[in-house]
Amino acid sequence: MSSEDNLLPLIVEPEQLEARLTEPSLLIIDVPVKAESYTQGHVPGAIYLDHRALLRGEGEIPNDVPSKEALSTLFSSLGLTRDTHVVAYDDEGGGWAARLLWTLDLIGHTRYSYLNGGIHAWHQDGLPVSTESHKPEPSDYRAEILNPEALIDRHELQEKLGEKTFAVWDARSRAEYDGEKGNNKRLGHIPGAVNMEWTLAMDPDRGMRIRDYAELITELETLGLTPDMEVATHCQGHHRSAFTWLVGKALGFEKIRGYACSWQEWGNRDDTPIEK
Image (cartoon, rainbow, N blue to C red; front, side, top):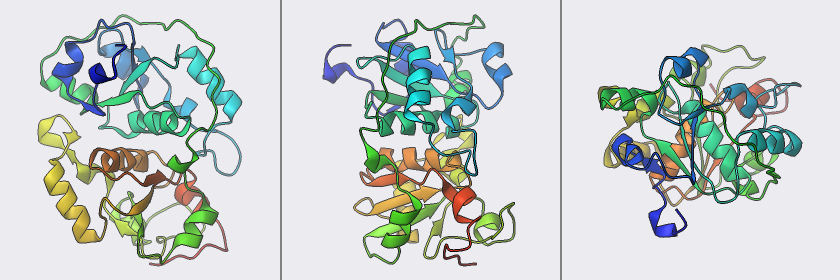
């Protein structure tokens, strides 16, 4: 749609999307954990994206952001243009879809939405699916990091630790947070970080949609996270925490940022402060 008023909201419900499936400006992207999820049935018109394309895939921190060249190639192959409105979803409740949206945010492409609950909610609502593979029309998209504030790196995060208006949301499991589990050189959590595992923000009874906003805000406030704060969120590889970034955005946390290198970096260094 050309009018800003007609853009889809950040969190779009299945019936809202179904009513607008034929709009040419929409690019619906399925980013499943399992490729067969797409072939078994997807939102009509959706294209498939291998989630590994959202990661650098090499070096000591393979979960870092891909290069600008790789992002340009990726988004050109998906047919992205400046006027495209992307709707992302997946088969797990939002992690990989959110990593795609976070990456779009990072390159300054703000026309995006998350299909609430992904394919689970779509199925639960009894909406039609397609098994026909849909190929995008390639574009020439030049990706630049136009919104670096979407990202926080280790140096800035470490400098901000202890500031009253700054907080860290650890989206990993409690066992990882407590240092009882993990494959890193060092286990535990960033000093002062609070833990709410990413799946606790999902409602399994409602097709994995994001839980009631008022309840979530109350729970986060209890942990010490409020919408006026600057919040860095991380997990092991900024997949789970991409979802908590998205949830934060939906709840009005305007200064929520993703630590892309996450514990893959922090837990494998000798010079990063760690608590258990």
